[in-house]
Length: 393
Ligand SMILES: Cc1ncc(COP(=O)(O)O)c(C=O)c1O
Image 1 (cartoon, rainbow, N blue to C red):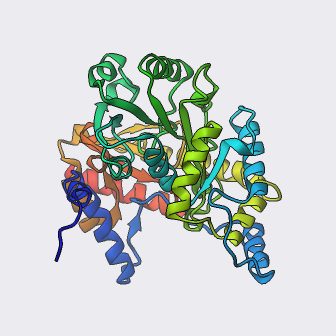
Image 2 (image 1 turned 120 degrees about the vertical axis):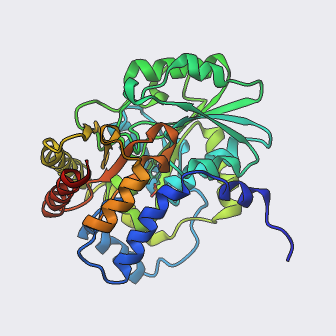
Image 3 (image 1 turned 30 degrees about the vertical axis):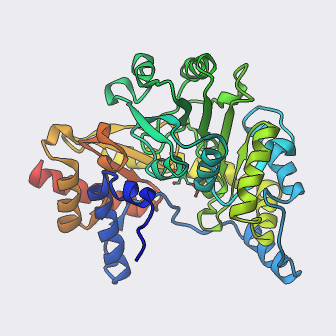
């Protein structure tokens, strides 16, 4: 057999496999019928997509919309996304600034292909959403991860960012609101990041998939900062905001030249997202736009409930998230290593949480809990966690 590419080898070398193994095992047991398991190690909703959106896809299919579409999306969808961005993010843009992609995952991958060359270097952070690594090295770039310290509320220290700079640095990738930390980077942080990118002529790939799910702190899109529109590719998704994870649809907002570059990439890789998915997305953006607010309010309620439920558990510090659907539990005081803790918790209490190492070294001693579950499930998870700490903590 001929050999596989160096890309596959690099992916296999990624640390954190042990952390994700806990989740894989939980899923395996769930599929095998262990229904008393509580799986809070994945970022998906426990409910289905709004009926109005589903009906729209069904009608589109019934109407015979079964054909190819433009590589970066139907123009009416790009127009609606531009209007949504103008309203929700606060930046007036037109369809020429929008490329529809099959999910934010693909958005980051495509942005990387559009702006990076082999040998380029990208500054990323630790913790980091796990798939950026594969998405950004695909083009032959290398990645450095600047630590985000828990003691600094997972905000970047610019001295450390500066130290990561190399002559071949071409881009930076950021994620605010953040998965897994739930941190929202304040305006001042965005401004220093923007200054840095301008000073060193870098592209900024900004993953903003949780931008409609902020609770107390407002989201700040770096494109709003002067001089950033032509160097920032902001990535969004219908997955979380509209509970459409399995539909695979997202978008990138960028300057028209970058959108053209994405169009070239998408033309050679996808050839257009399914028309019925795009028509459903149009319904999501107009007739069903209220889902965005109801989903945010549901998750605000769940965040508060799970934080309340866990507040009295000794030796666990909660990092109350400002956004998104994940809560970080700091278990360093228990003396446990997070991977061992997660395995034992799965064995004894049948609760699956994700060890922080799944996102980088900075999250050793932390566990990520997804509150994409009902009140009853979250209450029961809190009870089981409390019993576990009483026994072992
Ligand atoms: C930070 C972040 N970026 C990207 C994605 C991928 O989103 P999509 O489903 O749109 O590909 C996720 C999904 O969990 C995420 O948490």
